[in-house]
Length: 403
Image (tube, rainbow, N blue to C red):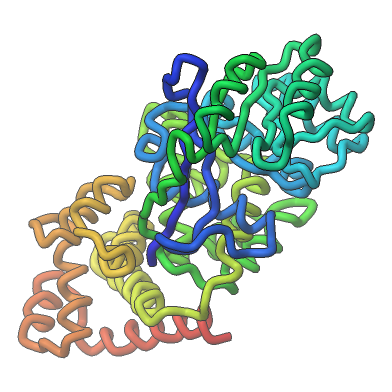
């Protein structure tokens, strides 16, 4: 499934690139087309940080991202690196006590704050003491208003960003008035960047959302929900092993990832992933087959002397179709997945300790009984037990996707 984020560059007074505003897109052509600001921002964050990657999107520059009141109060911004994100408050956000408190927390934590489409009103006075950048829409304001905003707020140590600058005269006026940053069609139209996502099953997202909002998060239950969903497992493991967490070693266990995140971070990241995934279509057959393979691999592993490695072998089965999900070469995807080398080698058709289990599952699926018998004998698996294990795997998948 394709995912998209649009980016528009922001330049400083020397015309050097300062950062990008990241914008919601549903495809390569259309602009913003959802009524939910929460969903738009959640999708931008997920696609940017987890799927496309900030290195590809911004090359280390700042990312200006719109935040709604709900996401601001939920502290979602603190789940992202403060040196990469500029928290941009939409003009619809009223600066009440809760909003001011949330902004103060972000400010104290070292985040840059920006006001989008700013038009002065006395109710913004308290907020102006906290923000770092004021964005002024040059299409929606006249020359007098642009100058008045700068004059009124100059003593507050804020910088000004002229957006929707489309002409040479607008650019020159912004320079004359002391605007620090410029954004608009005069320099560049938004460019859409494309990536790939794995379809998620919305019941698992809803269950995740329910579990992470319990007074006491049940790690056992949450682990079971995430383990049975390819999309959630992929995103969680990629998240915990990202540069943001800076861990010295790869985390390969879903449970270990959940424990390391802790309850507060679980609620932030879990809510974000759930908001992004709830609107997806019903289960894809690829997802069902992935779950069947994962359970079948796990059951077989437990019977052939690999009991202590069942989790790794489960993940091998779960990610065995990830190339079909993402329409990318398996080797390229596995490079980013923190599963053990034995699992990676098996999925790539290379010799490994796990390869016989994986090949046996494939042989059973394709009814290649000669191959299946040879592998079963090699591992010491009673052939007559295989149909029972496969039925159990089918039942497990049925419980996940159809109940």
